[in-house]
Amino acid sequence: MKKKKFLVYGCMLCAFLLLSSILLLINMHFEEKAKANNVQYVAKMHAARTSVPVEKKLVEKATLAAIGDILIHDWLYEDAKTQNGYDFKPMLKQVKPLLLKPDLLLANQETVLGGTELGLSSYPMFNSPQEVGDAFIDAGVDIVSTANNHSLDKGEKGILAAINYYHKKGLPYVGSFKDQADQQTLRILNANGIRVAYLAYTFGTNGIPIPSGKKYLVNLIDGQKMKNDIQRAKQKADIVVISIHWGNEYQRLPSDKQKRLAQFLSNEGADIIFGHHPHVLEPMDWIQAKDGRKTFVVYSLGNFLSGQIWDYKDIGGIASIDITKYVSPSGTKIELSNPQFIPTFVKSTHRRNYHIVPLQTIGPAKYKEIMNHMTQWLR
Image (cartoon, rainbow, N blue to C red; front, side):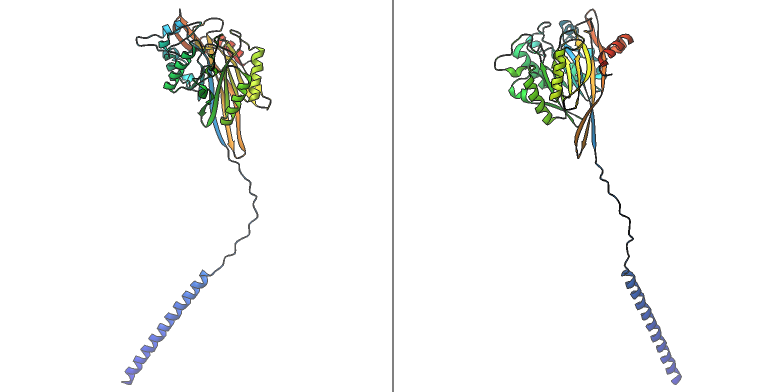
């Protein structure tokens, strides 16, 4: 009996000792874990680094181009006549891919697009089918210049009829206007984030007086007005383009008067000048403005589509210039570069089958002559 009691007490003692050991181990485990969680790490010392601020730049690019006189003689619109009206698109088919390449393309619409309702007419008082405009819109023209010596050939009615057509087609126009508010509205087109303002002026209207109280109908060359317009345009746009009707007909080099006017426009802030009226090509050039800027000028773009032939009157072309806009926290910078010229030729047979072709397809000798003529002052 005593032996059994001793055995029971022994087992109880062993159990107590075992339990005490387990509790002690558990306690030691939690203490070690707590210590681990309270360990402090000392950061290593690094050498000081120099911080260099990086100025981010946004670069935007666009190509602006222009073509010369669209001068629609009667044999041209007779050649374009169809059963239902007129179709000038075949005349542009071979140069359409070239016209579609620039981001913005200006054309000098020399003859009024008054349409058949006003009666079509040819030299010396032109009025043309509105389908002329349809063809050039289809070929890529983005804006037309309408200030020239034939602007008033059909009077105020002709200008208003043409403007009504442009509005219907959504084609911007500049140079002739329907009212004062229209004249004061800047024509600003956007090309890849570059804002381009277009202005247009002419030396006169072939002796046809502008109606009294309606000077807004046609922009005439006037130093103070051009200065004011350029200043307004520069406040809203990155680039100012001038389309100007000037010079002497059939002269292949600009007059001193043209050069002086070009310098004036450059000094006032014009970036690009596209000249019209001589009906033949006059060279391209760079002009240094008084503030150090460069202005690109084409003194005459010649005839792009007309019924005139011989003596260089059937040769025109596409002049283009690249625009780069740099935008950074420190400001905006505009750069003009890469002036190009693609000469064209109005081909026909006995005043029929008119179509414009790249001059290079006519022959290398004439192409080389024209390219040398147009680029002689750029070299």
